[in-house]
Length: 348
Image (cartoon, rainbow, N blue to C red; front, side, top):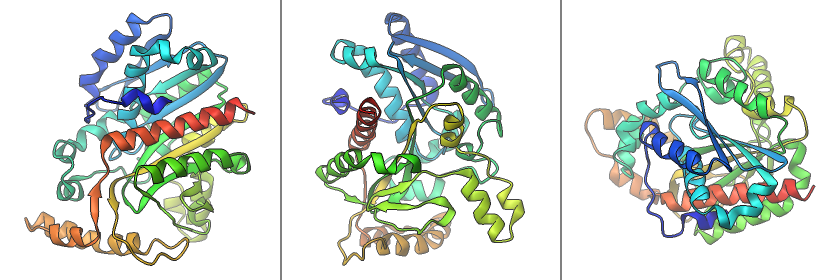
């Protein structure tokens, strides 16, 4: 299992710059399996890089970091490359069947802006005070293929290796009641085994599924507890046009999932959504209604104002049963989603 790659490994959040030499060296050492690609630079001049891993006939695209306050995805892809190459003999069948086209971090500038809380992880107050995410019009996930310089670079790298059997954009949530996975709508009826396996892994980790039925708002359609359809720029634009807000609608370009599907084939597209902090307080749960999560989000703006004044909100956070999700657990669940996605496309 891919999740076995991290067994016994101490995990921590590494910066974009510090991990590049190790990735480059690992690819050079295993040149028969991997190639390191310098892709260009971010808007602020930080290097963007990609890795092609494996020699199989089925292409898989993996990207992370589109939302800059979600560091688990990039750490998962860095770990997958480094540990996968170190233990490549255990993964011979995988690398013979698939070719992974990976951009471990699409947004190094955003990662740098979030270091104030990442360096204090798992301090929840530091996260709520310092977390930074780009607004619409700067949001890389809804910027394909060419909204920002980073979008152009990543899109060009993916296009060279298209079409894909599987595309994953690894994401996360600041807080949630549990784990969640988003599945591209054309594949929902073909993924019951994947959903069952991922839900089982979430529960085995001692977590709930984040059960939130948004009833199609902004294109997020409810599949079952813990599962929505993947986001689409077209649905976002339609939502804001319906609100009479054409200016906001114009800020949404296509998602990476929409872009990859345009490159051909019938790719399964997945978006992982695992929380940094879990709301674990027990309550009578109405299906599809995350009442604890909603109450928390209502309070969050006030808490941030208080934190900015130097006050503490630790007592209020404790009342919600808030707890950091262990990084190893989060990475293991990300890898589980990848493994189950690979099984899905291999069986079709």
